[in-house]
Amino acid sequence: MTEKEYSWNLIGESEIDPHNDLPDISIQRFALSHILIPFRDYPYRSITMINLHPDTWNALMLPYGGLRIDNPMAASGVKTFMDLSHSLHDLITDNLNDYLEGARRELSAYYSEVADLSEIPPLYRNYSLKFSKSANQWTAYVFTYHAAPISLLTAAGLQRAELRMKPASIRQALQEKRVEQTKLEENVVAILKSGIVEFWASSVA
Image (cartoon, rainbow, N blue to C red; front, top):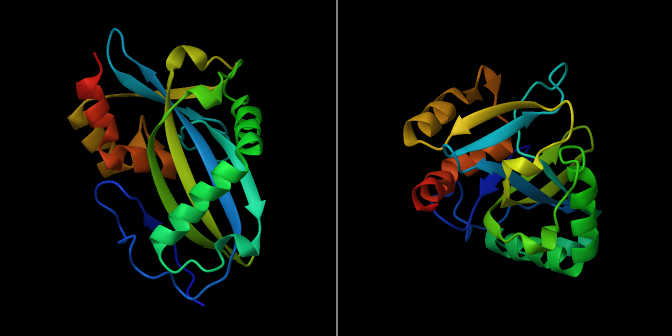
């Protein structure tokens, strides 16, 4: 069995063509992640990342929560990465209440009060497929990103880092995979690479 990570998206450049065939594997777990991007619009435009475990993990991420599902039949019949994307979307739709409740519960680690997540439209999605040696199984992931004002990020004790929404700042963060000397986690790198943040910065009034 090939122990490899696959990443793709359906908008813009993708590491893998989503029309490619999946490897000959059995996918047993599905992780549906609801990610919030804390943003500031005034007096300057920026996004804020948090370091939830600076003494151990010590990495900057965007707040997230969601739902994990163990169901080997959920991907039965899928042939391509695009097919798998559709299956992940179906899992969100079919389990919407549990997905939103799981996201709300886990996001409460970052927010003293979590907004109505059903009212926040998605900005971007990307996907990955990973093999866990410890669990000895493949997991398919969908990461759905949503904008949320920085004013909502009020849980006590969070270590934060801010990134200005400027092309030069974004390019430097991607080149170094760090902001303020702290490494960036996957969900930050993915949204910065997508170009969505730069487009967002140029289009926000």
